[in-house]
Length: 171
Image 1 (tube, one colour):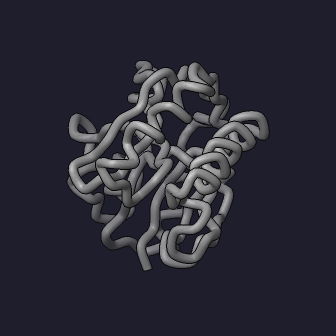
Image 2 (image 1 turned 135 degrees about the vertical axis):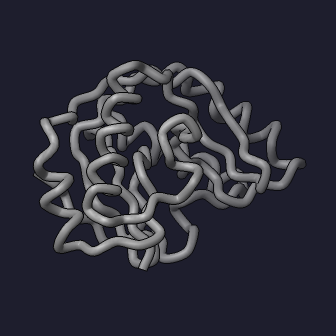
């Protein structure tokens, strides 16, 4: 089972992303609302783990100093090579420090971190649509520009089992 360490937004941030997902779905663009198990939450992934031991990972992460309540400004749209579109939060030193600390704790626990989530290679993003066609890109850009800029406060760190959508809040 794939596991990620994520930041979850406050209620206002969650509502804003969910409203955007809904508007995109209504426009014919599949989002995380309808992707795989349909239990996705708005989130910002700090680390994606390719192997781990929960009994070692949990205490390593909960031993970290509190890193929740990170505010980020979201004012851009991004796209990865394989057609995944996302909101781009501003990269702050606090966000980078939190991601680095989470990855270091995970590695100390014996977990293996996906190469795209290693410090220096990580690109923070909030996924909107995991499978976009180029023909849909102008529509997505228009919908996103209707709601930007957003301020999102990340209030919880969680373990998210990506294959099931199960969420375990940490701390």
